[in-house]
Amino acid sequence: MNFNATKAHVLNRGVTPDSFLQELVLWAKDAPDEIFTPNPHYDIYSSVKPFLGPYTSLLNRKAVMCEVLRVLGGFESSWNWDEGVDTTNQSSLHNINGQETGIFQVSFDSVGFDPSLAECVNRYCGGVSAKLFIPSMKSNHVFAMEYCARLLRFNINWDGPIKRGYMQPWLKRDAVAEFEELIAPNP
Image 1 (cartoon, rainbow, N blue to C red):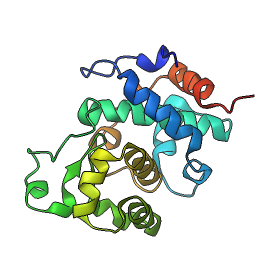
Image 2: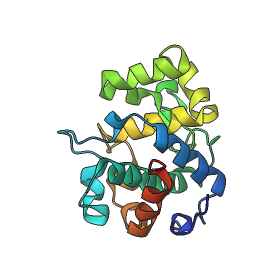
Image 3: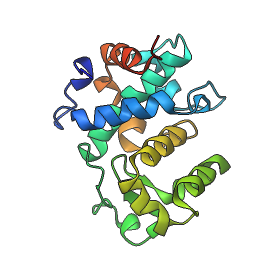
């Protein structure tokens, strides 16, 4: 796979590693369509529409999610799958359910936003607990991408860079177009 537009700089985090982009593309090719279809919530697609919309197809929506995850991974952890708890957040340090973890800095307490999130955790982790969630979010990259994408469809307020609008200016339409080419079904 050749990456060009998807290597765009993200703030002071640098450029996205090829290894992350490869995993993201492979995940998106096989990810369930239900993750990307329109829903009634104010979700990530609502938030980034001024930057990446209008959305033209399911393939385009998948590519938009890839671009969101690319930039979010940079903002949250500089694309470090093993990123741990935010040591500046006192509530996270004293509550295992609220500890941010992994490349997207997602916490276990987010499973409460929708029953489908707990189902996703159970499917990948073999149970629904913070003690299973935290190491799986770091080691099972497919789980981390799917869970974060699903979570972003129900709520974006858990994520500071999205909620405060810091991430959105770093999203690139040409990266979305490149992702579309990379994840399109082979003819």
